Length: 464
Ligand code: AMP
Ligand code: MG
Image (cartoon, rainbow, N blue to C red; front, side, top):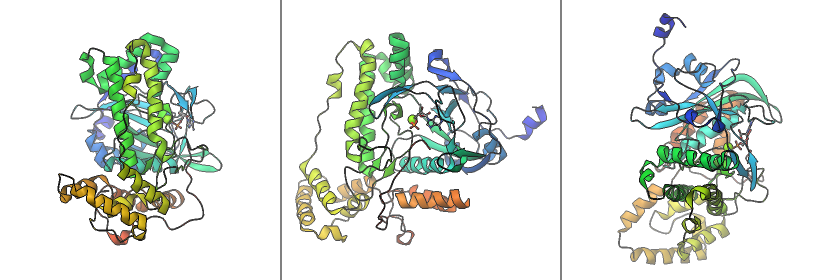
């Protein structure tokens, strides 16, 4: 590049550090994304860019297309594919980034550190049979759902950009290729520790644990038993994360240990979806035949995954971590009975909680059922014993029970417009309503409405 062409390009604001690249070689493979033919920037998250310390104006056009396709590597980045393992549907496998590249860690103006990762950026040594690529629909889907979770206040990786590659990817049919750029507090997973335990042994585990503590839990470095404290802290974040998922009816869909980030963010949006009618056995994923990752099983699975994490730490903890893992559940009968009632009547999950915050017996037809009415009376009696005012309870409900979630039929509608007709307006409008999920949306937009009855159960697909 000549000095003058550098001058013509406004500074994009990249500020990379590459601490993960400094870990022992076993943890990663250094390589660049595979260039693509004709990249086009189709979605760009200006607000997130600004938060990251990037200059949206510098990244909107061709520069964004070049950078977010991996065709141009920003200065200071040291791209790599991470090595990891994982239990997939209960079975241990060696994995690694088969279609992702971590560019580096963007340090924001506030000094926070985020992995910038491309998904769909070409083959790596971990690609196995895969082509290293991703299709436009699923990348837009991750963009919508992850940004919706963020607006709901749930820890998540975020989506910065989607580019189309101008190349086709072949699944059951030929599809438009795309790359998603996402930002994450880190991509250290339970599976990264499983990999270290299997491949690098005790020294590797200690190195990785120290790195994780330094990056995510710096206060624990001075703890008398920092690795046991790490287990406790990771457990707390996971418990809190899964509780937040349950609260809004989110089903991750593929809670393999390689998809559980130690920083406590939701990662890897494959077959995830939101539940409409309440049923704890709800499964959307086409590959989850036994309902292992059903809505209501998520707490158990998180605990199972944490047990795999605890096992990797055993050689450096010297204490029985089982004590930390067993938590008392304080489920109240009132909650259980409401959920049973909702299940019996196929009540809409989101709208039921939202309706209850109205204070009087809600109008919706399910509330006319006798068991609902009886439950409502019990709840009213319980509220009277509450030291806080009804107003305080109502406010709490309104700030925890969203009015708008990315309903499956709305997400599909947005994806169809974008993928089939290159019309991104439907998605933009949807993203707009999802950005303020705790406010009642305008009635006429209908974003709060459950889907019309359908003969087909909703199905989601993994890794496409
Ligand atoms: P996921 O279900 O997205 O978490 O992916 C599980 C594993 O499969 C990870 O190691 C991915 O990198 C890998 N993978 C998924 N899709 C592809 C693909 N198209 N090409 C190569 N590797 C892939
Ligand atoms: Mg994954």
